[in-house]
Length: 296
Ligand code: NAD
Image (cartoon, rainbow, N blue to C red; front, side, top):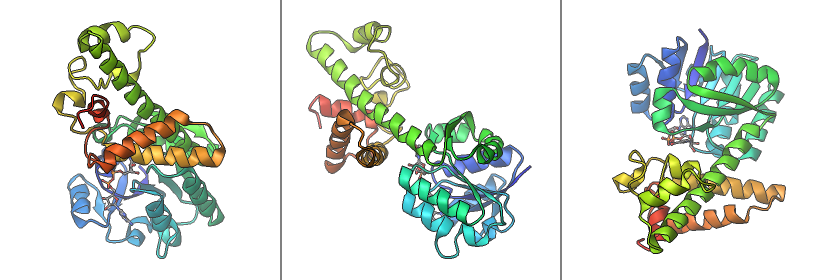
């Protein structure tokens, strides 16, 4: 049993917090939204009315916040986590944020005598609720060893990706690949259809040929072949265009700073940006199929 403060009880954090309670931890929950705190309490967490109240006695602080500015503000802003957590506490930030923000957070945490792990997740709200998230963690071996048992309460596959910020690096490189492969899969299905194949026939062939990929076999953007995919429910998310675009912006910024050639990543960023500009932020990201077909 670990004394945990959980900050950020939104779409993802709610399920993650509930799973930490289920795993037998003593969890104090805080969010700016009082309804989110009440929902966490109904699942067995203790209510905290402020960051200070949440972290005062915590051995571990877990956060699941929208973006880097929220993470840096909650941990290191006025009356933040680092002002009130016990010396030596471990900070585990699971939000998806820029590699540079994550590395800044690590440096500030260490300068104030805390340990930190950046541990973004792969998997959506269903995996957060089921406790089957994949975690990719960055930080020292000691910090990772301390974080691992806590992460196991919320996820199925846990990886130590290396030093500070490497969890975020793994996350955005993976999601850039996903964004590109979803567009590529949509183009391939559209081309096959225009040349006379139906989606199921092309799926049967390509899913056991060299074009096979997760976007095709687990999340097919053409309706039919993968019944659970959002393409069969009018592209309701799932994983929305706005979230894919956020990750592609993070990948683009990181690549430009690192001098990495990501021409296809930038093209994917532009395509998802155009969907967002046209008002399709809430569409599942596999709805890019409709753009490829010229429907939207
Ligand atoms: P969300 O907006 O539903 O939840 C964020 C929560 O943080 C909200 O409840 C909000 O009130 C709270 N919050 C914001 N500022 C705060 C502050 N200063 N103090 C306390 N609470 C504060 O977002 P989400 O969908 O849960 O996503 C969280 C993170 O997980 C994001 O970084 C996102 O990119 C990442 N992520 C999301 C998914 C997904 O499918 N939703 C999948 C993988 C990763």
